[in-house]
Amino acid sequence: MTHHTTPAGTSPASVPSRGTGSSPTAMSRRTRTLNYLVLTFALAATLLPFLWMLLASFKTQGELLREPSGWLPTSPTWDNYATWLGQLHIGHFFLNSAVVSVFTVLGNLVFCSMIGYALAKLDFPGKRALFALVMITLMVPGVVTFVPLFVMVAKMNLVDTYPALILPYLASPFGVFLMRQFMLGIPDSLLEAARIDGAGQVRIFTRIVLPLSGPPLATLTILTFLSSWNNFLWPLVAAQSQDKYTLPVALALYSQGENATNYSLLLAGSVLVIAPMVALFMALQRFFVQGVATTGIK
Image (cartoon, rainbow, N blue to C red; front, top):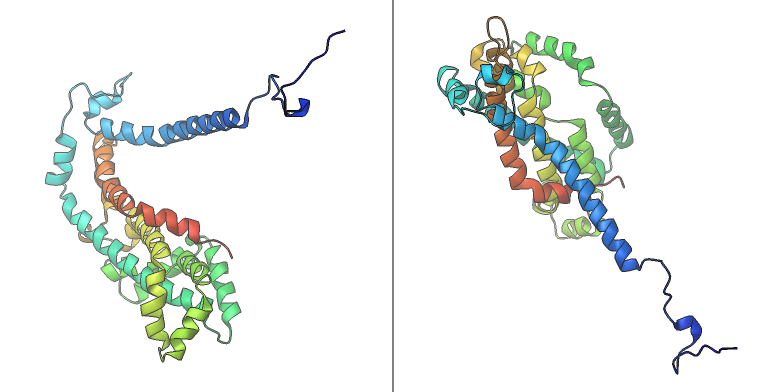
C-alpha cells in the first residue's frame, strides 16, 4: 500500500487540479478574441460596399458594366467627378442641401430642447397628454402626413422655396423625446438652487440646462443632419425647379441618361454626397456615443 503525501502546510483540497479544465484567464482571452473576430467581420461587411463604391467611381461606364468588372479600376479616371463639378454644377445643389440641413438642425436644437425641457422639468396642465401626443406622433409614418403637408405648403404659396424645404422639419418627435429623456436626469435640486438665487426659466434653461445637454444635442445634430441631408421624396415634390434642387434630387435626376442610368456618374455623385456626413460624424462621434450611452429610457 502506498501513501500519497502533500507538501507541508497545505491540504489536498488546496492543490491545483491538473485536469483538462481551462483557467478563467484563458477563457476570457478566447472570448475576447471571438468578439474581435465577430466585430471585424461586421466592420468589413459594413465598409466593403462603400469601398467598392469609391473604387467604382473612378471607372468608366463601359468598364463598370464589363463582366467581370473587378474591384480595382484598370484605367482610373476623374471624368465622373469633373462632370459633377463642371457641367452639372454640383456646388449649387450642395449649397441648397447645406442651407436646408443647417437651418433644420438649428431649428431642432432650439425647439426640441425647449419642448423637452418643458416636458421634463415644468409642471403645467396637460403635460402628460402632450407627451402622449408626442409619442403617438413618433409612431405615425411620415408618408401618412405627406399629402396634407404638401397641401398646407401649397396654400401658403411656399412651393419651390427654402421655407417649404425647412419648415416642416424644424422640430421632430424623436428629438423632443431624446431631449426629454436626458433632461429627466438633471437633478431638480440644481434647478431649485438657481431659482432661489433669482434665476428665471430662460436663464436656467440657457445657463444650466443647455450646457449640461451637450451629448444629446450632438446626437440630435448628427441624426437630424443625416435625415435632412438624405431626404429625397419631400425635396423632389416641394422643389419644382432646378434652382431649389438638393443633392439627392440632383443625383437621381442627372445620373439618368437617354436610355439608361450612368452608374459610374451615379457612384461618383454618391461619394460627393456622403463625404460631408462622414466628416460630421467623425468630428462628433465622441459626443454621439456619449449621448446614446447617457440618454436612456428612465
